[in-house]
Image 1 (cartoon, rainbow, N blue to C red):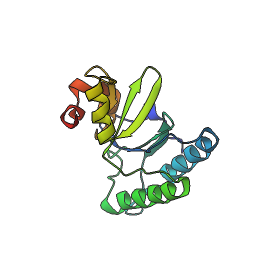
Image 2 (spheres, rainbow, N blue to C red):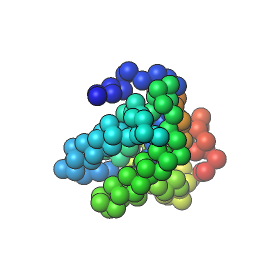
Image 3 (cartoon, rainbow, N blue to C red):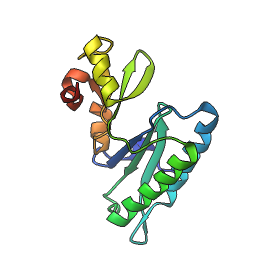
Image 4 (cartoon, one colour):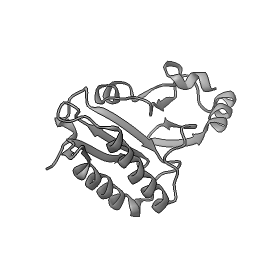
Length: 160
């Protein structure tokens, strides 16, 4: 079953995990295959979930479930966390630090700890117009409309 991103409704549930650094180019294809294989096998209460997974910008793992078909239960979410923790250990990255922020400058994406983010703001290296990535969004519609937004329009503003 190939679950193409475009086939999912705006209401599809989304989880975004960001790596503390970009995945190396030579590991990216393997990581993408692993997350896509996980999505294809993901189950909830013995029902296969209609799921999508991919790696964006060499650092964001996107998981998506169409809960119109079957809900992602607590156990299925736990299985995704176990999978991601194993992937994290294998790759030597941190996927669960929510106090790291990602932003875009031109075509480059950077991920830095909160303190460094605040220092970059204070020094003027980033400002209210800098595009930031909102890893707290929860559905595909928000992913498409407001995953990237100006820092001044984001919850990130409270952190600088």
